Structures are given as structure tokens and as C-alpha cells.
Image (cartoon, rainbow, N blue to C red):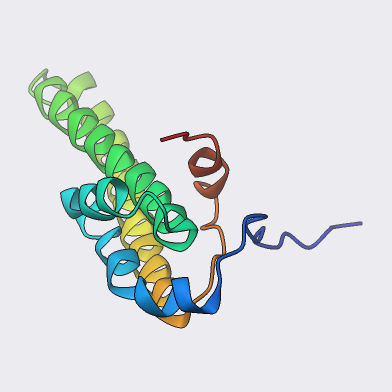
Length: 131
């Protein structure tokens, strides 16, 4: 019997005032290195920190994808085996990049909606960040 997988809601809750005042900061959390702004400037806001931690995990994931992509580019220079490995890993990187982009869109929508829902697959890692 298959169980439904639901996105976990953050245990820490934010007040409505906190949400209203920090929606912009929460959105910045999902725009690359701009994650540092709410991460460092809004330490007192549970809402901004929740989204900043998720944005930080997305940023780190994107950097890792970039490094793997670069290494794959060099491996792909090797005739035949490198081409095959490059093609397969390149496709996986492409799919992962699309997934990260979708997570960014989901995070921005959650931030603008005033929700503190964890993003699929990465939310569990964001919970472990203590800043």
C-alpha cells in the first residue's frame, strides 16, 4: 500500500506581523547569493530565516551541480567512454537543474503566500542548518 508523501510544515511558526514584514526578504532567499541578505540581516525573523535556510540549500545544490558539470565537461573530452559518461551525467545534471529551478519557483510562491512549507527533497537539509 502506497503512502502519500506530503510536504512537512515547519514546526517553528511565525506571527502574521513577521510574515507581512518579511515577505520580500523571504523572496530574496531564493535568488542566488541574495540569500545572504535575509540570512544575516533578519536573524530575529523565523519566517525570513526559514526561507533563507531553504534558499541556502538551493544555492549550495546549484554550486555542486556547476562543479559536477564542469568536471563532466572535462571527462567528455575522452573519446568514446568520456562521450557516453558525459552524455549520461549531462542529462542527469540537466534534470537536476530543472528540478532546482522548479524548487526556486515553489519557494518564491510559498514566500509570497506567507507559507512555511518545506520544499520537497531539500527541506530536510534546511532544517539542520543552525545559524
